[in-house]
Image 1 (spheres, rainbow, N blue to C red):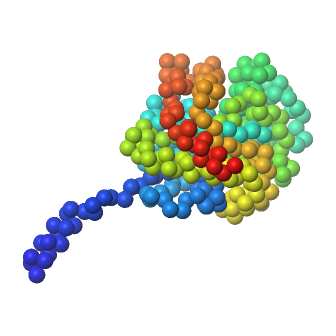
Image 2 (image 1 turned 90 degrees about the horizontal axis):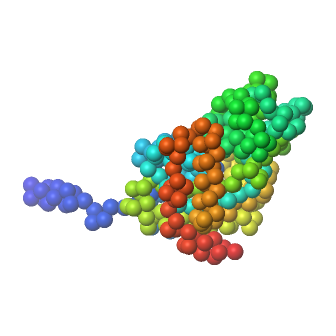
Image 3 (image 1 turned 180 degrees about the vertical axis):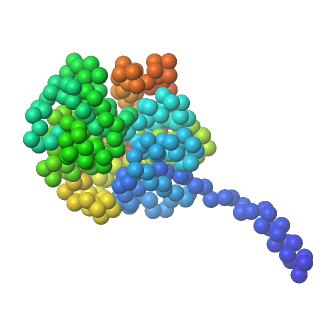
Length: 316
């Protein structure tokens, strides 16, 4: 008996011949996970996929910086701030979309009709968010200084209440908040992001994961690109799944997905140039010190682009 126990202890000490590989993905609710499950692209994974849900990009990026997850999806604005703060992350997948849903909203009966009318007004948004970005870009387009408006930095739920109560005159936000407010007749768009913001979102990963888990990230990236191409052909099935998951009327995601038209794009010179313009915008606005501003080309990993283009094309 004693010999058998010693043999068992020795076998346990050796451990499995090959530990199961794990990819730890961060997601914002209703985003990549819901899309990939709806598209049916997660079958037959050769590794274990662990999802962590986050309410917004900022806490997801904090988790990435802390090493709690390997990768996750975020907008270009919060990614820019994380890179400037020295987070050890790079973008390795890029998506483009129309910017109808990234918008500066006002109450339906508001006298504000243009960006110029926002001068001296209070605008609610998240600091460093794409909502913050669209306000800065709109002010620059209108030839107004960045301090023309008074920012109230609030999360979306609080910003929505602030607009409804009149404690702010405008709310700069994104989807699904824009479509929800529009369909309910609670807000009117003064300026959306089309033509003034690049319409970029990224999947970003820790530098260590891009080295140690590159095959896993490549497999995940190809599956996500196929899912995006699937949803682009017909957004209705994804909208149905999203609606059930989030608990909002199906009309909200259908409006959002139909007009956004998310598509996977290679990380090419155009993407890098657009990201550099975002960096430069934040430097001019005084949000990122010039000395800490990264060069856009240094915060991308372009090695996945060809495989992603092939994965997207396979669904066309």
